[in-house]
Picture 1 (cartoon, helix red, strand yellow):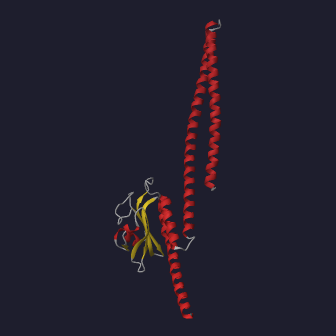
Picture 2: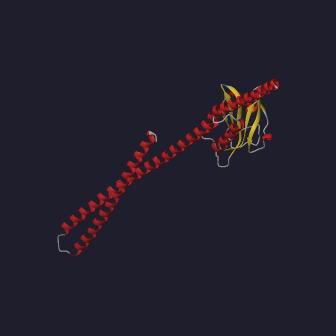
Picture 3: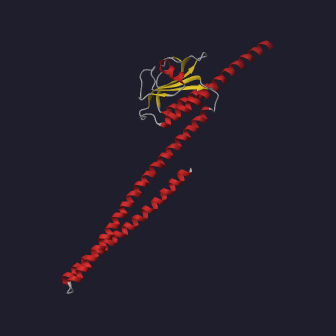
Length: 272
């Protein structure tokens, strides 16, 4: 637990204690108020039947009325203070929920980053990227693109929500997707869905040292996803770096494995 969270819990406990003491004090004041009212009523009844001086009874009545007004004012002040304390407690509770959500989101980002670098298998890396985009971004229709050997073309290699064949290829620097990849900056348009698979609502370029590796293009969000939060933009930046590095490493590994198998096959052919 961080220092800010401990301070929030301490302040919350302090206000809750003050709230409890104020509630007890208010109940005592109300009891005293009721007791004085009862006494005043008894005195008024006695005044009607007793033979004492009317001046003395009036003096006593005014004294009791003054004490009642003082107690009522104290009750009003305490209730006002309790309202302020309750409002602050509500604010602290809301802040606590926000901190819990931020911690949970940070944990999800850490887990996602760790998973991306936990394997060198290209298919596994693509699967992890797909799960991140679905579960953390909340995308329903999207595709992952990789550059070809010339690094000028972009071809879809994994997709969700539509058949992979439905997503067209693109050229770096051309069109919405290609322009976003060339700029090497995540681009987010203010919309929830695009039926045109050449017009994504989000494009996350994947690059290693400004070298384009591919892109994540989102075309539709899940129904419960209203829009993009600051955390989503942080996630886009994380994907732009970590996903690109994971894809780059897995492609190099796959290529080295193919070359190694080719060399081993050639050596076996020469030695046989």
